[in-house]
View 1 (cartoon, rainbow over the protein chains, first blue to last red):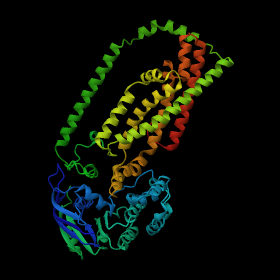
View 2: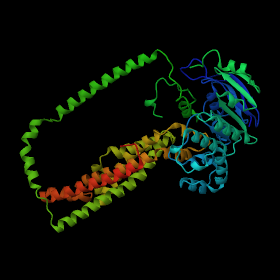
View 3: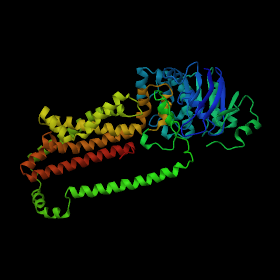
View 4: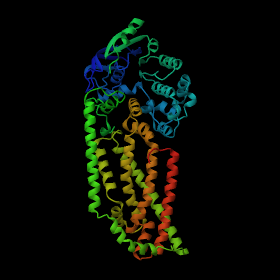
Length: 246
Length: 302
């Protein structure tokens, strides 16, 4: 799925500095992009713009040829987009496996609903849930309730939830925060293994960003780097000098 | 999100009102630090002024109420003799077999009224709560009438509902069930909708981002988070139903209350004592069962 931003700005009221300032960016079909930048650079805002959770104050954007600012087109975009949000966003009170399949709910039939409400995984998803969970090393915890999982395990359940519906666009906001280096790499490998999917992953971790064929760096709401090879000097320019914005 | 509890410093976006993401946009700013601006101190100052104002009004309200209702120690002392006569009449409680049997029946009827009313009240109350809760997102033309209905149900006292239903369906426990059901539904609707609105917004947005409908989001992300607290509220409502059914029995809506009313009007104080002991035992038993179940669920409310 192709993403195209043209001169997009997003300003939050009571804030003079825009979160995103005149950003133009094109991400091609099935391209894998790492979004790098210090805290407050605008990574999350950019991800939220693409998923339609934030509306731009200027500029235009299209996701798969559709406009996320239009209600009717937003639902179409969301149905073929997998999202891993920053922080913990699993539903407490449900089992890990139920959380893992929530992304597929728009296509559930009555039988699937019945299975889910009884705490089971609908038969047609069971095999894929097992495979993905195995790859993430969370298979033994699938029956546990979310509140009994560690932060890293929750993150990986969220990753499975995003990948399971076979989305055409995958947005992952800091998917590796709270994971140890080995688990982080496993998580990123899972993302790379999904074929034909556009992937945008935000991170402030250089080593994670370098796993991606294309790196786009943000600083103070603007794109300051866009390329495949990020040298240490480029990294210095992204992070060094002035402190991150409040 | 309750607008009253929103941090005044947290920026919220003037999202276009018709945009479905408007609610999410406000949620997106939760993690951000408040800006370090000079209005901070001004706001704190304003808050402490408000606090003083509230305190003064509260004290004035208490003094005014004590004065106007004629509460005084002297009236209690002078009335002691009359009270003593009644209390003396209560002893010893009557314990003959026939009375005990009828008291047993009345206790069971009260229990039945409370359970039947809990059944109807819960169904109606949860339904209204789902329509009322702001984060579930029912359209205004549905959620507002639901809110009004719930307000009417719980503001009209059970005793009044009981009078209405006794007039409509006649004396007996059925009138009590209808009366308590309506009041319970009104209360549960309010309390449950508050529990629904208090759930964590992040999982709700995560499910909404999958393209789920409002109903699916409510069922999958909002209700599971509030489930234990809702169950706890329902059990607590059961305790309230027992107490209510004892009171509305006085106007003929069945149960132990009806027996209490009759004994009182006939000045059979020994009978009254037996009934009061039975009621006390019933209330304590139900309280204990409910408390045990709520504790088992690990709910945080009450």
